Amino acid sequence: MGEIQYQPLRSLIYVDCVKEEYRHKLQHWLYYYHVPESMAKFEPWVTKYAFYNALPMPPKGEQFGTYRMQLTEHYWMVNPMSEESLVNSLNEYFPLDAMKWQGTIPDDDAEGFMADGEAARSSGGGNGCPPFIMAFLPIFWEEDLKGKGRTMQDGPNYRWQFLISYPDGHKEDGDAWMREEVLPAFAKMPQVTRIMTSKVKKEINNCHMDRCVEMWFDGPADWYECAVNLAKDIARPDWAVEEEFPYVKSRFQFASLFLADMPTSDNLRQYRGYLPMR
Image 1 (cartoon, rainbow, N blue to C red):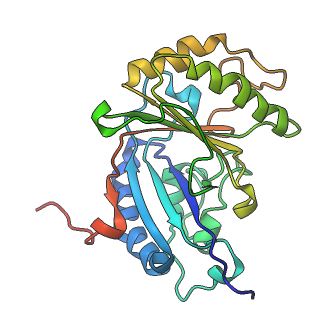
Image 2 (image 1 turned 60 degrees about the vertical axis):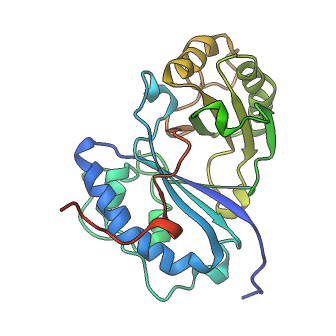
């Protein structure tokens, strides 16, 4: 093993809930088991570990691969996928049900447990289910395209964050289409108040997604006007696999979350254990 290197990173985990029947169960696993186990493992080299509850899926949200549970965000001081970091004194508790609830393995898979957390984070993709999404980004946004200078006094923001994967053989021209056609088109829409973007650091964990974008709106009606109505004018690229914008396969090649400004739980500072209602 080599010497551990200082490498600031931000990671985004998209957590879906495929049935409302599962939401309370998934929340229980996340807060009762997963948060304390995660902090016990990485607290010394993480500066932020937060959950953001997903806002309700807006109309046409299925078209944009909307995830319905939460965003999990980490700020790392070292690469958590390095060989050195994979030596753990205890494995994480990952029942298969936790992956079924998120939709990365089929609902009818046999009962049991994942080998460990890394196996869980590699689930999906080859079984007809969307791949588990853990995307690493630079610790700062790489490009600030609209809304620089916005402050908290400008009001609360309806944040649309998405990840896109371009088809194989079209990674370069796909990203050129995003940067030269899609993002400028949204930047011209008055309902869009903020746009920031970064390329996914695929070398960290071979994430299948290629780029992350975050856009802000006043609310879901403005998002709908832009992403559903006005985006129809964005030219369909030659490599498209779907007829409607964003022209790639929902949840497999395009994943979205709708978020408010504040985290539901900034775990390193707020978590006090699983304290049920009286």
